Length: 235
Image 1 (cartoon, rainbow, N blue to C red):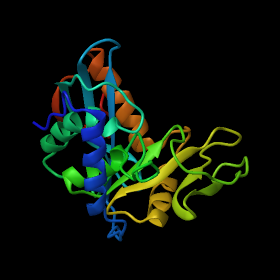
Image 2: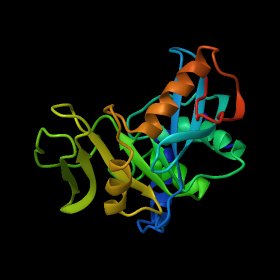
Image 3: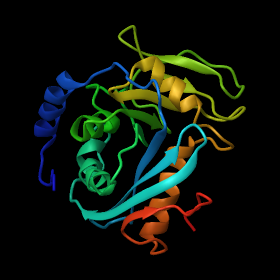
């Protein structure tokens, strides 16, 4: 298993600067049939992380399957270095999936990051898959004000380049922040996430992943790969 325990900030920064050279910002997403959400949960002051990837039918957002793993890490949460804490466990969950989804949405940044290497880029590069970051908070870049209506969006600029989008997913509610991770274009990252919005602020793939890892952490779901029942329910 990939392990970053004991890595220094200097070493992590060097790895990000090297990895960013291989990030691809072009899409081959003409016929998406499945999309996944990936997330991590943990108990405070412990070294155990609970990772989950939930696969949904696209664009219907019906759950097909999910993969859950628990792993140990001593890497602390440090803004801008989330990939080093969470990617190893998520890769274990990824390996359990017998059929890989067409694209994965991660709860965090893609290229809207000081070194263009948020967790969506980090995971996408190591898993060799198409990824999109959809973060609840802004990390890096600037965006013009957007309208208060659901569906309004505004480009996120980094050095005058459009690196992602702020997207209003509910009327008068704080937007989410979208950017490509790997093998997805900036424009397609917005197009795909816009089709994943239901009644909630958070898009369905990462919202469902968040729910499942919290149930896993609290003992209500078991580790391993699981298929949904015929109704698409996990319960």
